[in-house]
Image (cartoon, rainbow, N blue to C red; front, side, top):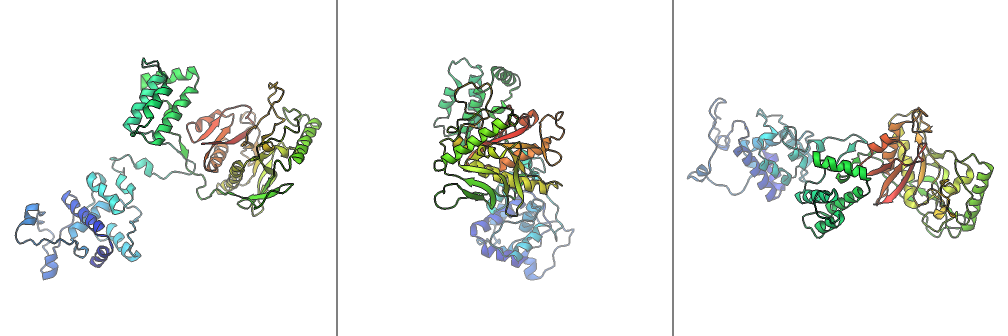
Length: 527
């Protein structure tokens, strides 16, 4: 072991060497239990060590160290590291490296293995000191030696708040982030809330107050400034009755509104499945479109909206004919002006086909309540296409990993019209001369509700459809949340108040908006 420590001393930097030596000596001075010491003089002279029951020599004091006859060595020699220093390090770290992982100091595996054996206490009879017995200033040295911060933030003795963060999260688990404890943040938040609730007598608006307080404020981070601003805007969107309830809770219970709490997130359900990007062919889009792939998944066709406008308008006409021949196929529909059925947004040029396949030929999606002519209503932009395909891939993998006996593809209906054109499916109360219809935005898609039987359900009301699976619905929303491209967040419409409540104050927006009792609506919104 002496050779091992000598090797460590040779390869480590002088600073690291001094730090480790200082840590061991500080450990001894801190009163951490150590084993009886065998002096270096005993090894050199061959004198027998004192018997086990002999009284231990007193710890040297600074005066003793400076007294005549004690030779001072200015170079720290790891090969001559005393047993006391070794035991000090051992007692400090013995219980706090559960997996025996060590900081990689560029040492060979054999050397690291010997150090691990030392720290695991295989040959030691020294008592173990409690984590709470180690002074905080000693713990503070450990990160500088290369040990993970989690070792210095252990809560097993109840003296730290790091235990919850160290606990391994389960797949899909909701992770609650704490609000900032920065005193300046807290002061401004409370001051703005008192202005918003009308507690202070100043007639000025809370928005103006907040702008003044955060502008050029060096005590706030940019994230804290943004969070305060976004939180206050959420308060302005509340109904008066809700504001009064929050005001009462704030006054009587000092309850900070949830609007100011950071959004929760979710541990990935499929942490090993990465998001894939669209592979766009080189060159111009030819007339009639071309196939594009996302990670080898097929079932997407890209069009040049302007080049193929006439053909796309013709497809709008076919959808009109289908609606005339089958008046019961949709709950609400009108005849769309074919020219207005194709919009001007050339980003919305990707046509999701009725079925999609992975590289192995597995079906990733199909359709529900769908006629072939309605495929004109399944156009979207690149970001939403990537969201959808990645979600479909992960949905299949999730079912396999959870042991589903029936692995079902996603079932889709409407996306957007090409170029964000007008849709035939509109609210009957829209009496305008030019109703734009639903999904009049680049990113919108409808997906069927998951069913307990592995298929789909028809209603979120279990009394109307006992097959509706609320847990699978939550999982699907999380999976789509994991599939969101950078720069966006996910918004969902679903008439299931339990699910809406579950995702409240999270990084996924779920709203109870009609008519969404029989399907899920997903869309991307920019951050």
